[in-house]
Length: 310
Image 1 (cartoon, one colour):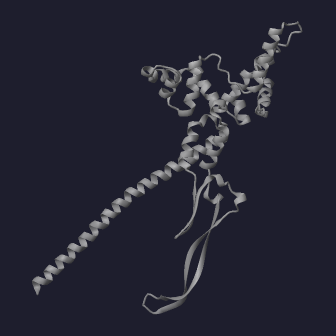
Image 2 (cartoon, helix red, strand yellow; image 1 turned 60 degrees about the vertical axis):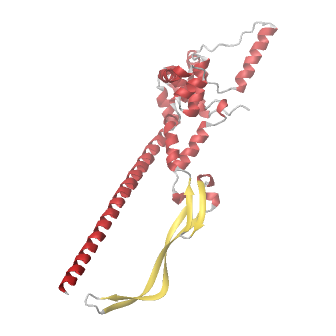
Image 3 (cartoon, rainbow, N blue to C red; image 1 turned 90 degrees about the vertical axis):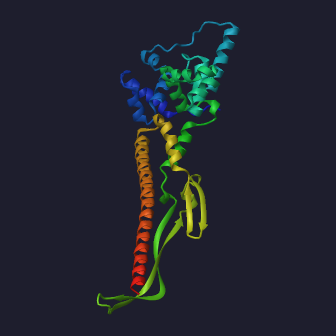
């Protein structure tokens, strides 16, 4: 079944046509919130230049033989089954195969070998292919529209990674702090030691409440458990999602690009702080050990002095 045509496809052409073909494709992409490579693909597939110049080839009324009719019918059926075919006529079969394998693994050497290049020269060939402008453009198109061989909708995958990367724990639970009277009393003293006041002893603890399951995306929650310290919720790996999004950064809308940059910056800062605290914590432990050792030495010397005096 053919995929539903993206409504932005026609909008993109109308915007370009309104500028008489002078508007930059990246500006149109930004306005429609999609990637520039997607706009370039639509321009090529829909023959914008021919449409703008009024040179779209029309069917001739002349009688054709049966063989030609069958060829036209076969070509039409093929176009209907692959409405989003990618423009890669300028690449060889091996180059196209390299691109398909590369977007699965992002390993140029292995992709070159699987595409049929000699293993002993695959490293050089892979590097050379990635420098080829047409190969890079085809890889961008594959990323933005994923071929049928991958059985994936790239944008759905990216959207899920984005949901994980930008998830906030408060989207799933609410926190409250509660005070409970223990039934005991605490005595407050003045500086001179006299009783100032007697007050109830209060214990405070945090309460965690899960939001209604209909209001949260359960696919992002990987674990919910009730332990000795209460209920805990574990979300999908945020750092892994951020790393994946970086690989497809060029496909993201501008708003998500900015959000991803901010989120990754926060994650890097948090990671640095955690590493710093771990280092400082080990130093604190050493300082504590030294301090305890010094106290023991003082105590030992006092005992020895006292023994000598006795």
